[in-house]
Length: 399
Image 1 (spheres, rainbow, N blue to C red):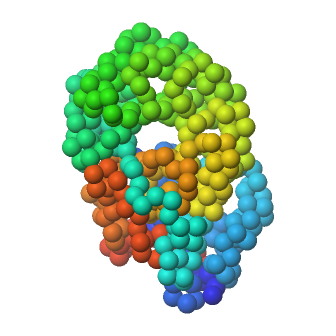
Image 2 (cartoon, rainbow, N blue to C red; image 1 turned 60 degrees about the vertical axis):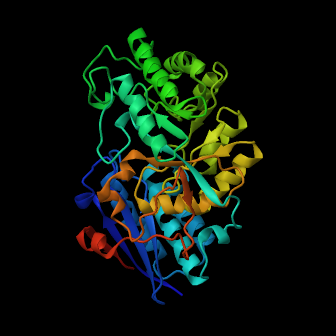
Image 3 (cartoon, one colour; image 1 turned 45 degrees about the horizontal axis):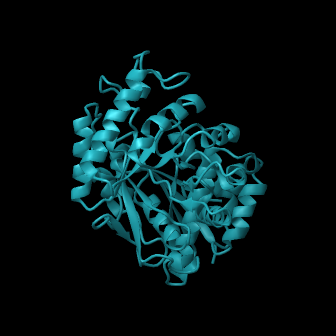
């Protein structure tokens, strides 16, 4: 079996949402078996870099046996020059290729990927409602009023979710997302003003009251905070029994994360901007993170994501796959999460509720009463729909 071509599908024109605009690939073989993967830069400002990195990397794998996944990963890591430098874009490309290769392998052996990884460690995947500061539904909102945060919790709970994630500081008291705000009084670095802390506490307090004591609340900082303001916020939120805090600070200086961990009682999580086992190593060795959040479309794919999970298990660290992409991303994450003993919970981003995202693929997998069932079809169990592929901007890579 040989790889003959790669199709790149840029779904930005039909996603209706620059916030999540998936970039997917299909690797084709001379035996008519194809596999799908997703590039993890379908949000933020690296979209077209994500499209083009697959063009660069793809030429290296044409003619190779798609079942030689480990050898292909090593080649992309060691022989592309930039693979050994790390970085978002190159690992997004490697990840997409790797996921597609695992999809092919599963189809060849007529087994879901989780079986190839060692079988199920859990029959169903507990899932949390993510980013409820945007509401919980198909329409994206920017919530300010604590009462609206409480309603988002009630909306999620009505669908069976027992855990939610919120960024309580990302929307200003004027209802503007912080990246678009010009309000210089809504300061998230340096020293956090009391009005920000008070608003964050009011929002989380309302959520706790609406969800009750059994609701798990995850705090998302989006690395908007620095080590000082992250500590301020964590201490202010400690009375509300927080499950864990995500991206308290950016991951480029692991000592900053360690400093925060030494000064707060809330467990810390991070991972969507950390790549490969080498990137996670310092956070494991200093025990600054308790929850790792590898994005399988960014960390290096299923191959590297499984290694990160196994390494985390050595340090009693749990895994919550980061998911902020399309249905291919979700399917890949579910396959890995099903097969690891240190899985804790799965993320369902509010952006993934949109019909234009859900309709991109053949199968509309969604949680039932707050739990996913792992796809049982061969491979990752998900494919782009013919309609989505026909409407996408398409690039073909051949040798």
